[in-house]
Length: 257
Image (cartoon, rainbow, N blue to C red; front, top):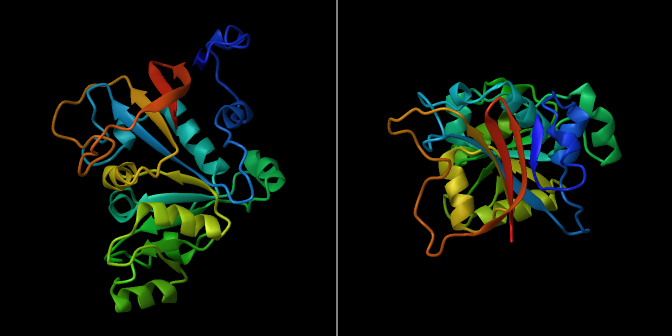
């Protein structure tokens, strides 16, 4: 792992191509300091050189070992992981696990042993017998709109999930999702997509930070980009915060200006 940006006195020392410790990765990806009412939502996505966010419907084939280590680090730093229902179905999501390597850091930050998972869904068409709902360390949240099907809401509650209403209709309001989670003490937020969910956060201008892994692969085909949905009127400009490199993968961070 090498640090390419920002260029500082430490950058030259970080040019050595070696495996970074989990503690070093945690420092590199630490959330900013938050005030009493503050919250921060970052997205973590991977894309090939030709813009594909998936291969055969999944992100794993375009990922790599170093990307997975950063993926795990970002999860370990978060209070909550926000994910779309389609991604839960396609990627076979499981509950976040407690990791001993991050236990002291989480305890010092006042966090529990593992982040909660918050599933965004209008229909609640989810398999509530999955471990994500039946055996999480922290109860899974199901985030939906006020018009969600009552029978599915009841199924979610019966399965042990906490239902969070973050929209007046069937769908959710991304900005309200951020606020509702923060009101529950889940202020360090991470979304792992998929592309349609990230597109909603982008369209609502609700995203604070994008952690984008650029995979040194080409796939062609018609795979989705990292965000999908209606385009914004004016493109949102972000500022580069950090670039790391390992084995041809670029690990970039961009923040809201």
